[in-house]
Amino acid sequence: MAHSQDQQKTAAAAYWKENVSLLLKLLVIWFAVSFGAGILFVDFLDQFQLGGFPLGFWFAQQGSIYAFVILIYVYAWKMNKLDRKYNVQEGDA
Image (cartoon, rainbow, N blue to C red; front, top):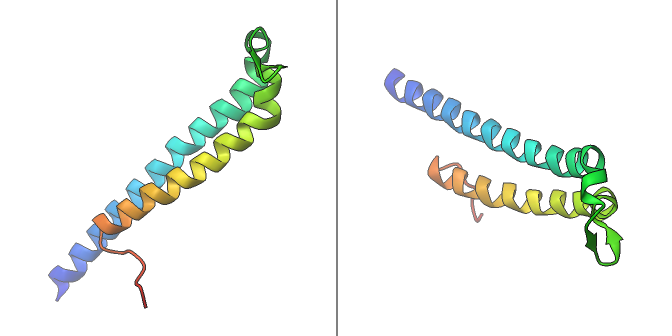
């Protein structure tokens, strides 16, 4: 009985570690797109055009929002895979 509880605790810790790792990676990408492309590198990016607008302006106004929505879908997809890996997926009840 205790052995099974130890395995569950170990699996839960591994699951949480992978979850936090994924979150941190996605947040770094979001930061790079929103803050990096929209603020830090805006002068460099503005020499390129996208849809008739300077690329830095586009990232500040639209790109970071699109990136955020894409990252939400990536997070959901990766978490579904992680849930199946650790057998904690939601039931079809």
